[in-house]
Image 1: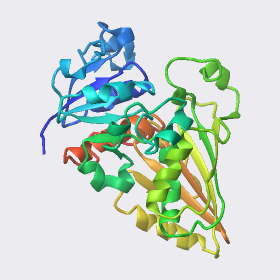
Image 2 (image 1 turned 90 degrees about the vertical axis):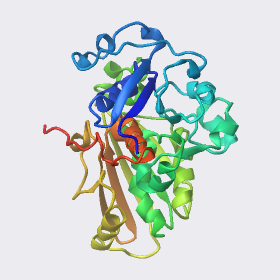
Image 3 (image 1 turned 30 degrees about the vertical axis):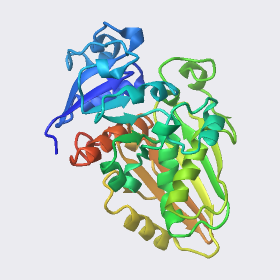
Length: 344
């Protein structure tokens, strides 16, 4: 086990990079060696991320085409737009571990990937070496891995909500997922339909039946157990900055009581510190700024409802990436991540 893990962050100017900095600057076993951002190369980190003023003297470096020219690190976090990591991961020095926060390496099948992301998988051989980094389900595989594909935010909430039902064979009929996200999930650069002023007093669905996280969800749940039918997966924009709330509905072939289903979830996640089973309903305010996923589960005869809430930038991105780093280097899984949210 390394006492201090030397870290590089590639693409540190966006929300994901900002959260990685916020978490890793206070991690007891991490040392940030470099951070890159082409648009802000030469600027101090604090000039771009003003919440970090007084906490770091780091400045942004440009991202080179060959990552072996950067200072040596133990692990590189890729917090770059979709498509960028495919051309860069292969230039890392041998032995350097990588955690990719984009969708470049989450989907095994290159044809399904191309359909989901609208671009060719140009690093198919590299993709075969990536481990899907959902810590709660694949901790042992992550601990042994060199390359990690960090899960998507919607996928994280949805899979954690549904996994106990799939594993225990409860889901035998239709699966419907109604998922909602805050505006930070669209990144720091505004676009016509994702800019917060457009979303702040609005509510709407987007990407019906075509969201890129659906094949990732199907692929992962297929590893957990038998998925009886393709989930109906609908995503919506919430008029908040942070948070994901996933409402998942499953049909069972036999009645199951609320007590039975709650006991099943508590048993399934009893060793998983970052999953909390709550009463009635989770609330995005309880998980905001944290690495927790709060889940509530209810039943009405043969219909089961599972609700999950996460912070899309922490458990849905940077926090889960740090959790994966902890597993990869034999650190306490909770290192640098065990803190509550705020109230209010």
